[in-house]
Image (cartoon, rainbow, N blue to C red; front, side, top):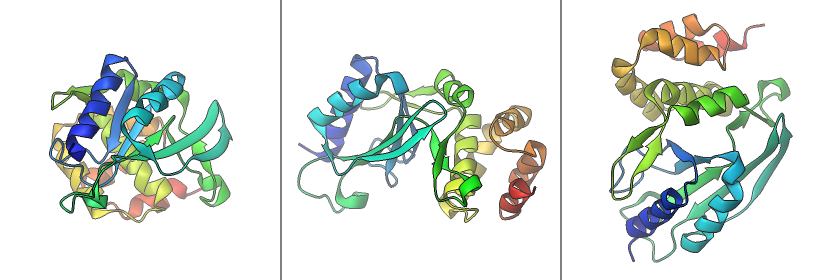
Length: 215
C-alpha cells in the first residue's frame, strides 16, 4: 500500500469517528504528498481516540510531554506512514506531527519551555476551520487563522528567524485575507497587532520579532 493511500485511510477514519482536527502546516501540496511534515492539531477531548485510530494506520517514533500549561499537558506525538521509503516524498514517507493543543515556545523562559495558546484562540481556530475535498476530506485553518499561526511559529518557535516558505505562504494568503479581521486575529496572541499586520502587508517580516518583544 502506498504512503498516500495509508495516510488518507487514516484521515478517512478520523472523519468517520468525528474526531476534530486540522492541519496547521505542511498541507499545501496535498493530496500528492506533504510539503514537509504535516502538523496536525487534534481536539483536546478527543486525543485518546485520535491516538487509537493513528495506531491502526501509522507508527509512532516517540512521545513528548512538555508538561502542564494553563489547561492541559502539552503532548506531541510524531507519527509516520509505514512501508518502504519513497524517495519522492520528504522523509521518504508521510510524517504527521500531532499535537493535543496549540503550544509553542515561551518568551518568558528565553524560549526554553513551552506554553499553550489561549483556549479561546484555540477554540476559535477549530470553530473556523475549512473543509478541503480530496482523496479523503480534511480540515485546514481559515486564511486569517493560518497566517496568525505561521506568524506565531516564526516568532516564538523560530525566534524571529523567518522561513522563506512561511513568508511565501503568508504573501500568497494575504490577498484573500480581510486586513481588519487579521488584526483581530493577531491581537488574540500578540501585542501591537496593527503594527504587525502593517509589516506583513509591507512584506517586511524581520522587524516583527523585536516589535512584539519590546517591553
